[in-house]
Image (cartoon, rainbow, N blue to C red):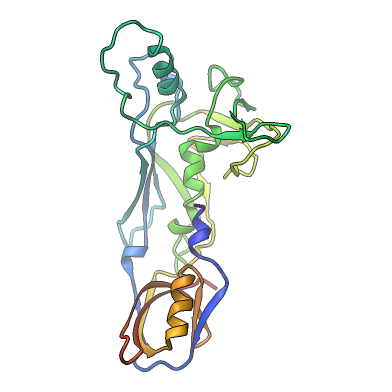
Length: 268
């Protein structure tokens, strides 16, 4: 699901004046580094694989106060060359094990036009400035590591800092790859680069965080109906003393209704 799916803005519950409310900094929610991309991809010993950019990226905010790394490495294979090498292996007569035999491949697809239940693999990139070998046949452009990094920017810039950018540091593969996703009818997946041109070694600009790196904790009696409503919509807002928050943890005593809350304040 998109990141924002887990932080929705519908108010589920309102609580006023809970006793012994504690609001503390949570350093574990402050990240200074991001490791993102794919665990497996074609290596440089294979034909044309030096061209691949569906590899791994390291980014840094240069924040000195903490040194926490957010790791988002996918076990799926999105590398076009690894996918193509595996496709060709199916035509070879030998039955030797192949390195990707037990892996799951992912593809960006589009709805076939006219609209049916058929889906096609989305193909092509433009504005590459000769940074990739075959822009007309490249796949999974919108699933590139730098675009995946854009999807996580709202976790990388704490609200109480002036850090303004995320810099690419550790680079593997063709990190000079420059792409604009080809425009095609029936596209389903939103392009994190909003249809623009993006290089895999680009510095990414600050995006305001969705929450503050804090925790609000307290106990408060709620009814069974409130508890049921909370469980039916665990990604909605809980407003405490006019502060909108999202749920981290909650446990309720069925005898007393006393509920222990651990909430994440929204950045407003």
